[in-house]
Image 1 (cartoon, protein in one colour):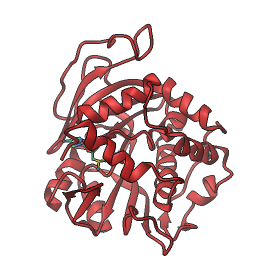
Image 2 (cartoon, protein in one colour):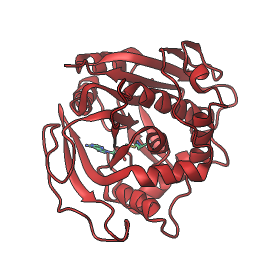
Image 3 (cartoon, helix red, strand yellow):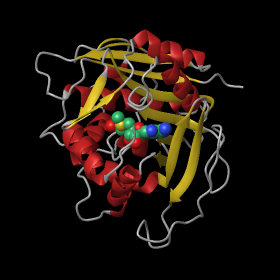
Length: 311
Ligand SMILES: C[S@@+](CC[C@H](N)C(=O)[O-])C[C@H]1O[C@@H](n2cnc3c(N)ncnc32)[C@H](O)[C@@H]1O
């Protein structure tokens, strides 16, 4: 599955990201992403590199990367998804408005909505369960505008990304030129394979790899899912962290009228795939939707952070 047209990518945004306010699944995933990224910070404070794989047309989770990471790569398989991301980076008329998500990230960085406290071990306010120990929260960036500016300043490039069994192909698509994102791409496209990216300024490994609703959404067997997780994990630097979420206990997901089949997974199967890929789970949280759920909330959402052992 990949968004074939702008219409499909817009339908996806309207379905999951255009509500009047964030729902419980949104805030759960923003908190999980923020906390997972904080676990990727190096003890010595070296610059934190982050790639989001399969971001689609979505910048919700990248808002977290923008405030925690120093350099961010946004990678997506579909042209329409990448175009939506580039429209937002360029500040184009008609670009999707991520203000609500950025505003919530601002609150999280300011530590006024739980911050480190909500990220600690035990049950979350929204019925989720967790097990993790977190370092201190990042420096406050307390406005939505500040969060969006941080992300725009941190994005190094937009890439084409193809998860393959056990690897990832990354192709450079665009970087900000002298005239900003409106200018020409800074480097010629370079295709890489096997999870090892070279050329065009793409690092071979990243301190943080973020992947939400990708490997689960595009596979139909547990084995194929595990192979794609292994591919994503191949990009994680020693000591770095994979932050990923999956919709568990479902067979399909929808964008407006169109249904997409996906693998039915338990949280344990997601964990097993990550561990088989050589990573150690350092945070995991499962959320079940509450009585007050919105129509697009998933019954059970699982988010985890898993570390590649240092060499
Ligand atoms: C369900 S969407 C998730 C989008 C976004 N991450 C989110 O959280 O809403 C799945 C995404 O995976 C992308 N995708 C499809 N095939 C892929 C592949 N082989 N490698 C990487 N991404 C892929 C799709 O284009 C789509 O953007």
